[in-house]
Amino acid sequence: MDPSSPPGERCPDAMWEICGGSEALQGAVQVMALSSASACVDVGYLCAALETADSLQLWQWPESTRRLRVRVPLPSGLAPACARELQGAVVRGIQYWQRRPFELAIDTHPTPSVEVDIEISWEEGLSGSQIGLIHTKASLDQFEVLGITLATLSPNLKYGRTPEEVPLTAAHEMGHALGLPHSDSHRDVVYPTNTARSLTPRDFRTVEPLYRLPNGARIRRGP
Ligand SMILES: [Zn+2]
Image (cartoon, rainbow, N blue to C red):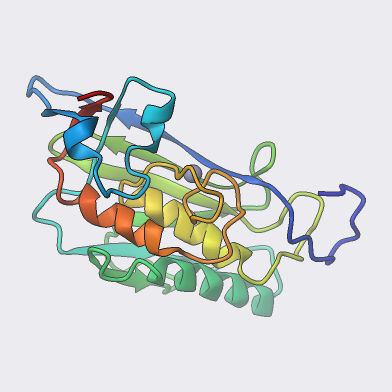
């Protein structure tokens, strides 16, 4: 991206990172060990990390999960119309994952009325070139999203994103919130930078096998 782009100019080739941090908490219970030859067949990009790592671990929401409650508040510090537009765009991005695999109940009320599973928060800008981040914590008993933070302003661009950038950033973080790792194809929404133009069949083909594999499964590269 040309950093001298005037505010408001669209920049469809902009490459910003969409990243996150996670903590894996392992208890005394042994996780299931699987080989990539058996576990990584027709699983989208679920095993993409094995291109560079010897093993990976998958975490997911417990089997008893039926519905996830997600709160998307209005961002503050913006004109009301812009704030509503951003909020609506994030809701749209999260809805891409509706019933894939869980029912999603999205709360946009100004005052939180119920406890939620996933809380979105807003920052004017995130560190470096990030536009979204997620912090998760996982163990065999629990998958917890400690928070998703989205930037209200793009670096150097102010409020002048491409129309689909906000929903796709929200969809990227929601993919992680379901347990998805990064994709190895720039077309998929869970690719590390915002190069996707939509969610792809491969995004959906990756979340299905995740929920067929045992929670906490460690997959090692090899036969
Ligand atoms: Zn990411």
